[in-house]
Length: 413
Ligand SMILES: Cc1ncc(COP(=O)(O)O)c(C=O)c1O
Figure (cartoon, rainbow, N blue to C red):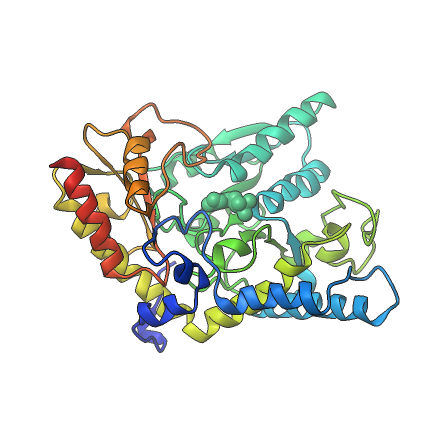
């Protein structure tokens, strides 16, 4: 996944102008928000869409035959069309979920539960996000209860933060049915080489892609990405909270069964069933779904290649600045491997200061970063378990990074 900037028109992002479009910064002018991999702030168009729905045409969708309900249902379908177009996919292959966690669990509970047999293997990287790893560990336990034994085969990550492809080759057998991978790692911020992984595993192994940290940051185009499932979070790409997307390729859609049933769902996979038929049941998070359309329009207005370029430049600016802080050690990622750019995520630690303590210290200065276990599937037992993660977005500027660096400089002086 090398983003070919020169093939696209990009423009420098005016962060001051962009920040003005985010009401959060009007209320919190002194806050440097550097926790965007967790969730992003919302542009005014998103806030406006949510507010309009609640104040002007709030109703449940697809539940009644009055016009207001049809209007909400139509707006959901418009948002689905927009989302599908953004990911170069068909709307019938897209379901809205409550977040990437739900999307990733649904793959295990729908595809996994219905397709895995005794002796089958699933490959995961335990350094990936818990939401990508745990659904398979959970499914293994569930199947154990029915006397079906599947095996979870772990593959590893290099010291610089990308997958060790050799361990994928070594772990692969004729019983490997699925491999769960990240597009961009949520702590290490590295491109995880999806095309190379597809070449290694061949066409028959299902590739489930966690695109949480790439969607909205770089182009995620499902007409050319060699994956079977794609999960991502709308709320990490400027849409409302509690929203995710789950996409399945046509050939896999046929292999799915409903994992949740109720109002609005089907109970068996009928011919022609869509992802929405299979997975959207009960009252949906309608305002967040509607806000996805506004979020995508906002991203399109800024330009996805311009976003990618801004994040790459600011990533480099950040780790070059961090390098000058005495005692700064990089975690796996762009700082450690001296990448030319990056995707907006930089993990590091300061010798002698625990990451959580540093997080509190920065919070006192209104600089918000992520510390803690970073929701990785396992600890490594090394200092890489104690990292501060800076994650950037289009409203972050070099001045924001300078404030972080200044504060870190004071912490070590
Ligand atoms: C790589 C990755 N996968 C999954 C998730 C879970 O996403 P959500 O909060 O939308 O459930 C996250 C969130 O941090 C993530 O970074």
